[in-house]
Length: 367
Figure 1 (cartoon, rainbow, N blue to C red):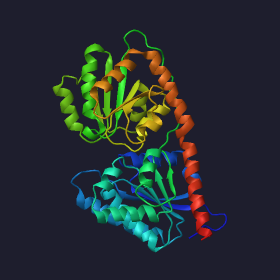
Figure 2: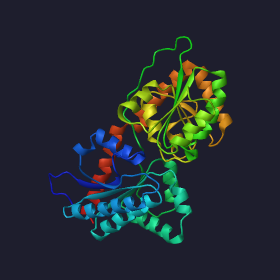
Figure 3: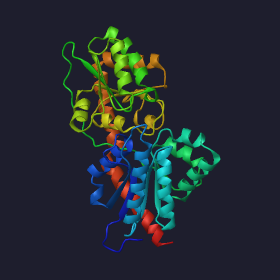
Figure 4: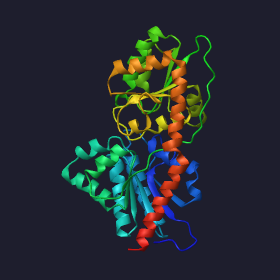
């Protein structure tokens, strides 16, 4: 199981397809872009590619294929198994792989990504709660996205090796030219459209702001309730100033950030939203809700504003402040970039990740 001298660590990861829409795929792709494959031999097992709600048989087929690939890959030595966990079916798919790793004495890393993991655990039956604790307690290391999540998991499971491994971003600050006249101010939301992400709260705030600031524009990018959001926008008569492009990636995503003046994410649940970190890395001020690990990235009145979930009045007021004050936007955007350098530089996070793998393998050799 342990690597011979001169061989890189062989790490098998299990999670959604790297082409999937969502945070886990973004995290792993960011690690790859930051050079993790130059440091380890990475074997990635896709357990899910479709996000369609009524695709149970397809998901079952994909999970079965993933299990076969896990069995095939463990014919060769695997030094560490890294499981990317969300909630509900995501956990159950990975739990079977966890049991296989236990059978073969492969040390496991359990990486909790979901902002709804607490609701999942506390709303589950006693048997499912036992499965969750079994997985987390028997894993060599548990990664969480923020200190508040570490405190919660420590209160649930008996495992001393719970560490914060935040999502990260590549620092790439944009220097925006000063406004001239009535230049448009662009607000950007990225995520799964729907009530849990505060999409409709943002639309209500924008409708109120547009009456006073006709130069403001909003882009709502993401999957989820795309048709429903477009219908809401059309019914409110805002189709000319609110864009709902659906899921965007690559060059479209970069262009959206380049045009953005304020990034907004009024979610009700979060782990550590990668889109917020991406916006900060581009030097953009943030308006978000004080949930999950968000307050560890967005420092109120330093690089943005934090409001409580569902408080449309406060959300509107914070956006109004930033829309009306270009120097404040620039100052907060610069602070966003500094915070990325201080705490969330993806290159340093990858180094920490590999160091954890090495520590696990070294401890296995001493057992």
